[in-house]
View 1 (spheres, rainbow, N blue to C red):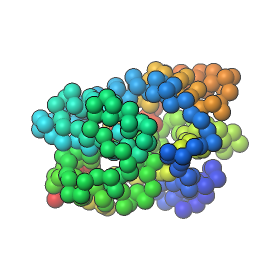
View 2 (cartoon, rainbow, N blue to C red):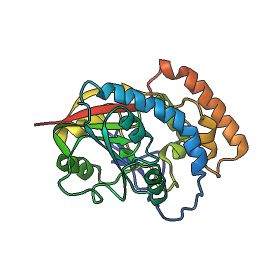
View 3 (cartoon, helix red, strand yellow):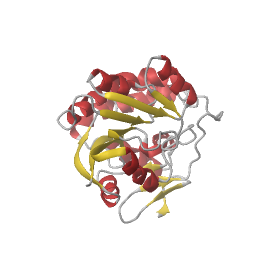
View 4 (cartoon, helix red, strand yellow):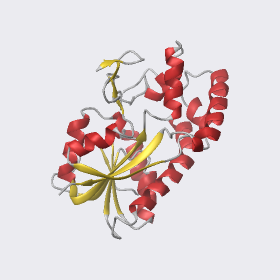
Length: 273
C-alpha cells in the first residue's frame, strides 16, 4: 500500500483499493458533536428510495418469509421496508442509543457488534450491509464470518459508496490542489464511525470471489437526492457559508449524476456451494 491523499489513508497501486487507520469512537464521546436528528432527516427519503431498489432486485431471489439480517441497521428503515415486503427481519446495531430507538419502534434489533452479538448457529437467507461494510475493520475476517450466518446458497448484499464515482474523484482533485476538506468528509474523518475502506466496482467483487461469494449483479443507486443541506450541516464544524457552497456543488453534481459514474452502488453476492 502507498500513502493516500490524506494522512492515515493508504492506496493499493495495483488495484486501487483504499483503506484508512482512522479510529472509531462509537458509544464514546467524540470531539465532534454531530446533529444525528438532522442527519436522519436528510437521509431518510434517499435511503428509503434506495432500499426499494435493492428489495426489488432481491424479489426474484427470495421466497416469501425469507429471513433477512441487516448488519449495522441504524434506525431500522431497511428492516421496516423488508418487513412490509413479507420477510422475517433481524438487525444488529453497535450504537446503543440508535439500537434502543429501533427496539422501541418494535423492530427485532440486537445491540452490539457483528458477529459477536449474534446467536451462534443462527443462519439467514440474506445478510445485508447498508452503508456499513466500509466502516468495519478486518474486512477479510468479516466476510469470511458470513459463511457461518448465511444459509447454503444464501445471499449477501452490500450497499456502499465507491471510489470510482464522480464525487469521490472530484474530492480527490481538490485534495491534490491542497483543499482536503471534501475528501476528509467523504472518509468521515473525525466522525464516531469513519470509513476504514473504500472499494470500487471491481475491487469489492474480487475480494468476495476470493472469499467464497460469487457476484450476481451490481447496479448504481442515487447518492445525492433531497436533503443534501441537512446531510452537510449536521456536522457542526461546517460553517454556514461552507454549507451553502457545498450544497450548490451538490446540486450541480446531482444534475450530472445520471450521466456520470455513481458514487453509490449495491452488489448482490451468492454464497458458493
